[in-house]
Length: 151
Image 1 (spheres, rainbow, N blue to C red):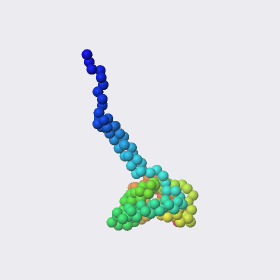
Image 2: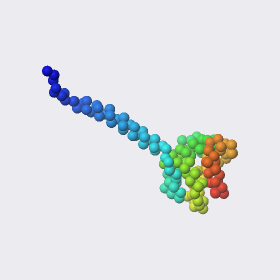
Image 3: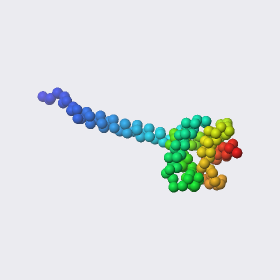
Image 4: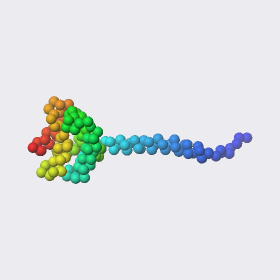
């Protein structure tokens, strides 16, 4: 005759089973949230003083990591610098550039002008060939619109 009595599962086995099931899920969720933090999909709101202050803080933090000023960087490095600043502040550089080109922006408003000057920083002192090497055609068009609005 077989013993049909069930063996009790020890608490140790239950805890071990829960850990092996829960830990990978928690790791996956936390890695996803870190990824989302790094790839923000919102432009800087126009005229938002707090957003500009966040950008200024991020700018100073990134600038302190450089051996030179941002304007002294090579064009592509300036672009990477500015993208990092925007990302650190919680915004997307490309979307902000396209927003500024596509919206009616009043550069008489200092907050709009300050944001535009930050957006076009990577293009300062860059010729057309260099500009095309690290910008898409739509970005180049947006850059030219913003530059013309600033004049």
